[in-house]
Length: 226
Image (cartoon, rainbow, N blue to C red; front, top):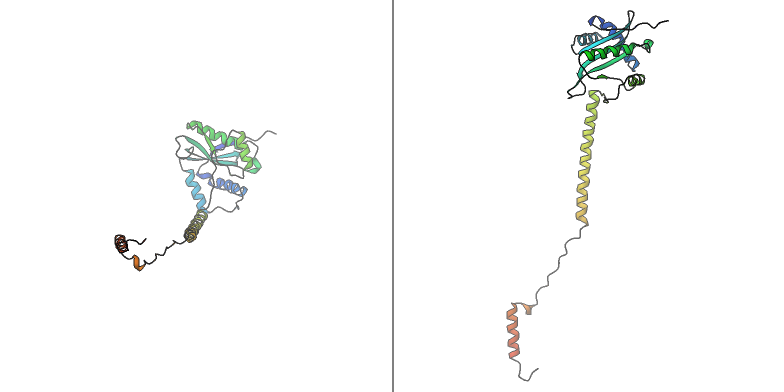
């Protein structure tokens, strides 16, 4: 039995409902909880479909949508001069995988890149998408950057905790340094004070006066005295 042909076309605002169903399936596969999409999600998707730098491609088999690809034109990396085609999302329904849908979607993205003179195609893949990583590697995709995501509230809480911990460490270090300085001063012996002896009553006076007194005493001795 011949394989059913996969057709790729550009999606419009009228395809918002179909795209929301496919996006919900993609989230469910990544571990998200499938739930009905609120109205504002549909409005945001409709606004994105009207953007000039974003295009959504839909893969169909007959009249059944089986996959989607969201592409955006932008810089290869921030502050770079060269532009690239960014595949922000590539998803094929599990029941239609390995039937050429993903290849046809990427071929359409590559054709649009050539038409716009873009030199590279960048594809965003979740870390858990092992099959997608292997599939893209076989097509020549190589790692470019690694991105991580965190809720804003979590980031603020963690940064505040690290800042408080840093202040505590700084206070402890200052306390230890002060104690080391105090211990260093306590280990040094106190200065030695040498007592000064009081002068003898006979030694009071200038040295010259003492010598004069000695000479006068010598002059009073008898001539025969030794």
